[in-house]
Image 1 (cartoon, helix red, strand yellow):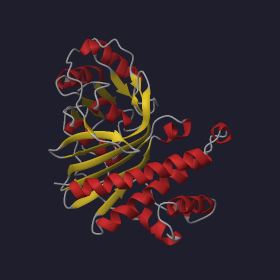
Image 2 (spheres, helix red, strand yellow):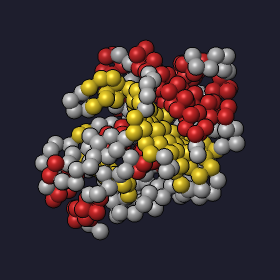
Image 3 (cartoon, helix red, strand yellow):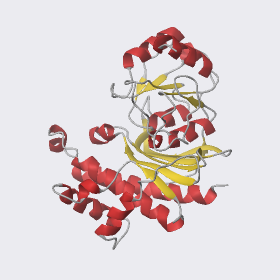
Image 4 (cartoon, helix red, strand yellow):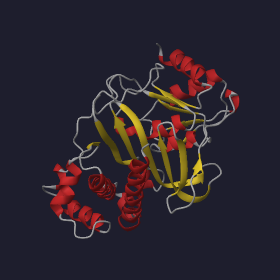
Length: 328
């Protein structure tokens, strides 16, 4: 099952990855970084969303899409200049595509999600600061049916074959479907290989994986959890859903996304593709209370609090430590 969906989704994410790489090569410079100019990532974000939705619409015209961006800001004021660049990059993949077609494609991502029916959820660029720094970012696409994630693709255009020590090639695709396992291959092509989480259950030898940005998770609380578990290795800090990929291929055993605000609701597009890649590689993903992630609640994981991904065999011990630090 899901062979056609994975084939189409893989092609869509491959194309979007190339678009993002081209935007970064042409528009990001030391000057834009110094000025904290976010326009290049805005171009890539909207361009990737348009390219992926156009590809999905060609093959699955009846499917709804839950995506991060809406095109309103491209229609007025300074956004029109960005819109021109977005359309230029989309046309490199879709020659002859009109401005209205690009904007309409972006706006198709406004579906509500929910517990019934079938939809795709898309984060066109997860890890905007990583994109600008030249570090890690991801294009994340997942298929949800009746509230359950059934297939997913993670495109990680700058991720090396190994993070520590860095090994080439850079740029990897991670694919998974329910009951079929998880696989990885270079974005540029090649034979996929099956993924498996780390088999070692010795927590003292385990590695944490957490966000680079402290605003996304509490580094201090994560350090206390690591101390309780006897983990001594320094954490692997990496942007975006690439963290899920690093756990799925066995380079880290634990990924913590600890709540930084009581009222924050995680977005489904930030976790759906990573969730299925890790779970199909043999891992386990819950919230910080040990509850399954519930993708049936609309555009957010409003019934969950934070995220904990592990190799599976150590999950209960990690959750116990999280409870001790965060409080039940």
